Image (cartoon, rainbow, N blue to C red; front, side, top):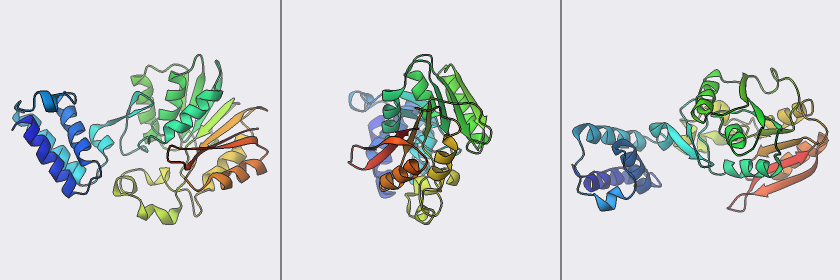
Length: 276
């Protein structure tokens, strides 16, 4: 089958499955399988796929039609201009999380130590280390499966100065860090069933469930962070769109000052940070 024709079939199949970005997903899957780029569709649309390429593409379209995340099918995703391995053991990095990384980078100086609580794929910590000089970092996660993915990403990026710890929040963490950063689970438990199937059915439930009010981990991390930050150390969070003031109060009650709430490109609260 020709490149352009099978792309059309893939797009139509994803539209029938109510995939929001059907054309984009169909193209990205085709490019991955054929080893092409976006110009191939227009410049070489008449090229014939091999039987193996055709079979793999139609299988990938069937998987995406079942609402399996595109990133899981590809086995990777782009974040902060870097490529990260992702799978069912880690939360797929979202573009909104880049705002968290960018805010930390504004305050990150050479030689600082960073602690990433709930590191998952390692995308936050590894991005911070990639775009800084002589910094060191520890990525902590309760899931050994997630840590295997984080270690694979560290190796892929040839990251230096990084280590990982299997730890329930701060339980296995020693020492102090100038910066603690976290994108913790913050979905209210009752709201999880209303999430899109790609998230609800394929992201780890432990990476989503923030307790009854969505604030459980903000309370726990903020309380524990005081033992691992020097005076003047900073704590950064990604938050849900309606959690800014609540997280600000939690941090204020624990002695943090100069607290700021940063909005995303949609004008919604996305990051909170403050200084001990």
